[in-house]
Length: 225
Image (tube, rainbow, N blue to C red):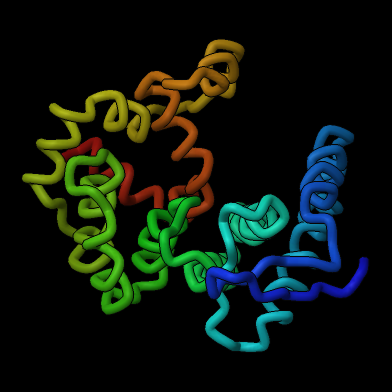
């Protein structure tokens, strides 16, 4: 793989050069389709690390309007998701933090994933710094509130649970469901411009599944509450 180079733009932002991030993403996806999931993860991880190393700990902001730079952010984000899926929470957290360092506007909404990782790592100080960036009207906010309270005290936040049950019923039902099938209906709906709440909640379940597999007692607490 070629060496990553960062170039300044006229707007004080930077763009990624030296590698074709679009091709890297496509190559990784093709490997997944061939059943070569580990190889796909390695492809993204190698590229992500090269992009991060190119910044050399400087405060670099990437230009979201530049396609290659936008795809560079996608590579880092997807690599973080790869690591979370196998339980490497600390590595995933570091990568998502890099996404936000590169993109203060957080176009990919890495903050949401960071928040759940911070709770898993019991880093409640960092959690507090990102909670204000998550809409209190969202289902994820109330699920996160429940998760943080349980992780911190082993108790259930009754107000957050009531809101999840009533205002975000599909999310509540998804998270206490015994199965989460990636069936044809789900796969078709996720391709639509506005997927149904059940589809969105299932996608989020899959994205955070490794956390709940390690913390089945939290899901049991929601069911019993």
